[in-house]
Image (cartoon, rainbow, N blue to C red):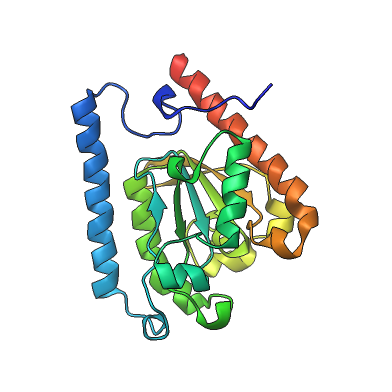
Length: 233
């Protein structure tokens, strides 16, 4: 028997209010898209960061602007920098396979990164860079209003679990300990479940974590199904 598909029209993945007409839902989605586009332009004009000089493109985000699942990675890689789109390389292909495991595609979710510009040679983000970039990430989260925030790897996990505070990141454990452990968080009355995950790129050099990632994705599917049952009650 094939994997049961989780459909957008079941009201599980799309944050658009269910009591709206089709035209009202279209306007709602258009409003979110418009807000994201304004934010993208603000980053281009307002973000003061040396990484702008060494890169080709801003890598803002992609996906469903009203998605209930938002993935947050670390930083763009070479392919992402060249195209201006997150997760277009090998890591994106791995993420797409993991999503298909739970009946989803990249079009059903929203994806962004801690940093909006690629660090040279894909080095780790610095605390200063995270401080400069993440206020815009927080605004993205507020616009999209996800029910689940899936953090990919150490940096995004530590930042979100530290209540979006860079200084607090050093007090948060590593992803090898935290992966798959669901944590409820809130920001400005927006409540969501954080699901820490290994970064899909890690499977490329450590194939043994694939089983952990698949298990954690199936755990995330259980949250989706629980949300569906809550809406029925």
